[in-house]
Every structure is written in structure tokens, then in C-alpha cells.
Amino acid sequence: MRAVDRLVPGVSTVTRYIRYHSMYAAIAAHAEQNAWDITVCRRSVRRSEVLLAALQYQAEAPPAWLAHGIDRVRRFCTDELELARAADEEQLSQSYSPRRWGFWDQYGGPAMVLGTVDVEGGVLRPGRHVCPPAVKELFAPLLSLAAADVVSFADLERAGQAALGVPCPAELEWLTGVLTATSAGGTHTPGEWEASDRTRRATLRILGRAIDLHGHEGDGYQETLRSAVAFGEETTTDPVLAAIPETAGWRGVLLRHYSVGAWRRLWAALVAGVGSKDGEADRSAEELRDWLTQQAPDMRVRQVLDDLPPLKSATGRLLPAERELLTQGADAPMTNVLLLLAGALRSREGHLPDDVRAVFLGRQRRWAEFLDPTWVDGLISDHLDRPVRDLASRLVDDMLAQSRRVALAKLRTDPATGGLKIFSRLHLRNERYFKTGDEGDSDIGTRIPQLGFLAAQLGLFATRANCLTVTAEGRRILETNP
Image 1 (cartoon, rainbow, N blue to C red):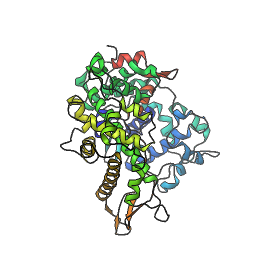
Image 2 (tube, rainbow, N blue to C red):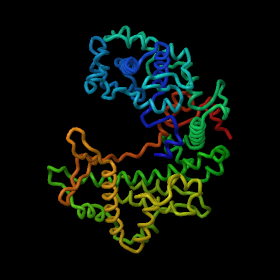
Image 3 (cartoon, rainbow, N blue to C red):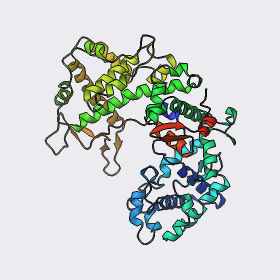
Image 4 (cartoon, rainbow, N blue to C red):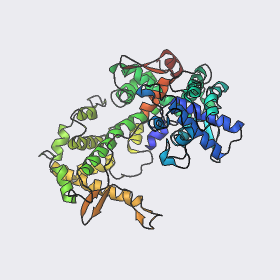
């Protein structure tokens, strides 16, 4: 996640729409012009978010363009929009969002990195990329309605120019420049931009070039990037990819991503088989070990390693072994064990170029961390001529131990009771484990799907016949032609 944060600055897994960046920038401009304090500013943010969602209430927008919070806003749309109730700042749980600043909490950090908004004493103010007058005017009707407690749908319709999916040339030109680090005309002058802007541009260029090379394969943004960067020789043979230093970082991130996902799925599957404290399905450590060992093949670890798909060709080209393993089914626990073994082998010195390996292991790494690929490689050495069942048993013990370490690290005093509060879903009582909830098994976000969708909204990328393409404007601005 540290590597992803460095490689995709200004984008998060929950910043989906360009239009919200424009809206917050317009609010910041109005806040400065009218000397709004934090109370007025927060009210304007919350009410504007409700209005943006309400604009789609009768529009039957496609799923790709559903405004944040629209499901909760619908209940406040009767004969009119009950705006004050929907955006209530006191009864947050009864409003469209339980967070005091609504969805600005999601967009705020990225917006400040992008430079579209700044925050001074908790109040929104214009960032280093000032909101253009035409974009400010785009939201003027919406911000005017935000002062009312009740809004008729007729009045709301007159602010429809701000709705998601409605094009605004000034917005596209401004935010294309911000996202791609280009000035008017689409020219990139490195000295005019901050390091984070240059890095984001580099990632966009890598993604754009990956689409040029593999977009016809019909995969999403992340798998298209993986095809170009994680495997094969294009990171060194393609003139565009080879010239971008961040390409090596993305190879390291995407390869490590397989190991991280494997651990998450293994842990979620283990916890799924444990019952609650009031049920009969609590489990001992031995029973949890049995859960995985019973699925292990009757082989020695050395034999399993020999049966792995090849990680490299005879010429040193990285082969998609992880993809081949996943065809066996990501839900199968032993598939994820095999992915961990593949990641461990890739961690060995000499397998990856030094710049790739540095990111694969973690740039701040000084020694093996719990459960990282070098940790698993140590387990391979310890279990090489032992049954796979023994390795599986050890993996369960390591997961349980790591869960305990993380829980203790998050230990806090509960102000309500004065006692200690442990933030964990798996608990131990009388040598038996019970759970208070299931664990998520989804992959950690790389932010590449979000970046690709933002770029598509700006007209840089497009989807045709289920295949990704870079538009002519995208190729010009991102310089993806060799």
C-alpha cells in the first residue's frame, strides 16, 4: 500500500468521479469569496453532495454513473427534496451520510494532493490549481439551492448542468491538465510540476501504453497493466515503458499483489469456518490446523515446488505462473498456498532486477517482515523435505500469531467502559477461537481501475467492443506513441 500510494498520488480506491473534484473546488472558491467559516463550509459540502445525488433520483442513471449516497438520498425525495433533513448535521445516522463531512472525507486527501483544494483551519480554500471561472459557474445554481431547506424538483432540474455525466468542456480541460501534469495545449514541462504530479503522469503513461499493447485482449485496466508490466519482456524492450522509471515499481507492486491477495483469502477462509462465541462452531488451534492440512496434497514441499508452473523462461523472461495457478480457482486454499510459494521464489536474489525487487519486498525493508515473501521462503527452507501438511500447519500458526500481534498493536482504552478494547474479529477464550465477524477476502486496491476510469471520463481512454483503447487525444497528451 505504501508503494501504491507513492505510484498513484492523488487517486484513491474511493475517488470515482471527476465531477466531485470539480464540485469541491467550486465550493472552495465560493468559500473564499464569501469568507465562509467551517460551519457554513461543511453545510455547503453536505447539501451539495445531497443535491448532486438527488439530480439522478428520476434519471435512472446507468450503474457506472451512480452518485455517491444516492440510495440514502432517495428516501428524502417525496413531493420535494427535503434537503435539510437529508443533510442533517446533528442526526448523522439518519442523514445521507454518517460522516460529518460526507464524501469529502474520501476526496479530501486526494484533492489536496492534486492541488484542486486546500484546507485552512478546517475550511475549504482554493488549491494551487485554482478552479476556473467556468467550472465555478457550472456549480453556481447548485450552490444557490444549498441555502434552502426544501428544494422543488423543478428548481433542482435547473441545476442539472452539474449532474454526473453531463459534459463541461472547461472542466475537462482543467482537470485533464491537473491529472496529466500538462499545461494548456497538453504540453508537459517537468519543472512546472511537483514530484507527485510527475509520478502520477508516469503511471498514466504506463497504463496508456499497456492499453496500446494489450487493450485488445478485453481485460480491465489492472489486468491490462499486468500483461504489459508484470510478465514478459516489454518493460525492457518497449521504448515507452523502458524509458519510464516507475515501470519497475509497478512490476514489483503487481507481483507482490499476488502474495498479499493469497494471504487475505487464506485468512478469510480460515475465519469463515469459525463460529461465534454463542455458537457451537468455536475452534481450537489444532482444528484450524486440520482445516488446511486436510486439503494439502500427500507430497513433500520439494515436489510441490517442482510442480509449480515455471516462473521464468530459459532466456530470463518472467512467465505468468501466478495467472496459471489462479485458473485452479482463487477460492481453493491450496491455490493460495501455491501463490505464496511462488512469491517466495520470486523474492530470491537474482530472480528480479534490483529496482523491481526493492519494490517487491518494500523500499523501507531492512529484514524479513512477518508473512512477507522472504518469511515464506524461510519456511520453504525449513520444510523442504517435509510433508506439505507440515507447512500448511505452520502457515495456520503464523496467521493466528500475526492476528494476535495486530490485535495487540491496536489495543486501545474504551472511553465508554474504561476497559481495554481489542480491534479484532477473531478472539481466543479457553484455548478456543470464536469470531465476531467475517474477514474480507477482496484484493488490496492498486487504484489502477479508479485511475483508468477517471482518465476515461476525461476522454483519454475509451472502451470499444469490450476492449480498452487510448484515444487520439490521450496518445498526444500522454505521449504513448514510441
